[in-house]
Image (cartoon, rainbow, N blue to C red):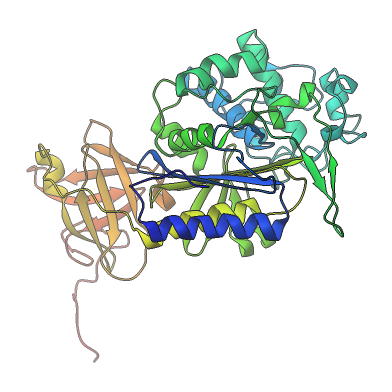
Length: 461
């Protein structure tokens, strides 16, 4: 079953259906639902089911597991943007007495806090949260497994702490804050802490026989901010649009861009696998494409949401089995199918509405030593620096309004770019984090560090 959509070509829709059908059959999932977003709109939905008749659609709830963490991270970034906290603050400053207060809020978001991966036994995902009523029960007697800030070590208890932080600073339960500040503004009315009909049941599929066992569905209590939520393919598709573009009612485009940036040191095997972690978001490099989003699992359910911002395509995949389809791989394949079969059509080129005379004077070719670079004006009054040939350090720069620009990415992130003028007002050179860029290679009229040989350029003697 697919929803008829004129936006995608029939061949593309069939390829998407074939991919999820293969995933459901080979993964032996009782049901699998998927959605694809392009250009900020859901352009395809599909499902496969083992039950005869009408299968679940994009409005049926599934449990989404650790995708919940991304919602919790959004709440924390909202507090940061309001000035209530700084990501560099130790947890102890705002939530004292946990025994894990030396970890910073950023380290908790990026799973670099050093905390254990799981809470103490019994297995928290299959037991009621009432067994862990306090944070001390979630953390245990020895909460740390690694030095704080030294390595990426995924921690579910870390997000329990972040949920408690939200409750402490808002004075309300985590779920109520989430509903008011994120779910309602984004129109995610089918996303909730408890299942709401219609919803799928969670199943375990026997690894060696085609038989099922129902999985328990527990209220996770203190661990809820790490994995409690239920949602639908349609709601997560809308959430994907927000994670790609931002929404000023919830979080700005700059803040969601910050969430999508790597924030944790990667292990060697993670580098080889092309995976990283931001602030509440996973980052994958698949088939030459950068994907950001999150996967999730709880007994009885699998979920994935991933976005290619460059292609403006996102995919959501939900299944109701404990193990089976590799939902992240399926989501990546759905994104790739649409991006390759129907590549994004760029917006028409348009001239800038106005050009700043100072910035325009800087545009053109510059040299760092003998390396040639081009500096270009961008929309919004910014600048973009990039090598003219080959690879090299490039970055976009934000106009500070005082004749300087601040780097936004890469090697020059946070570094200051400024134009240096001679006493007569003419342009001498650019200073970028102490590097001197000149109009000619080693321009003798500019203050090149170390000076320029008086004999000038020459051939071999």
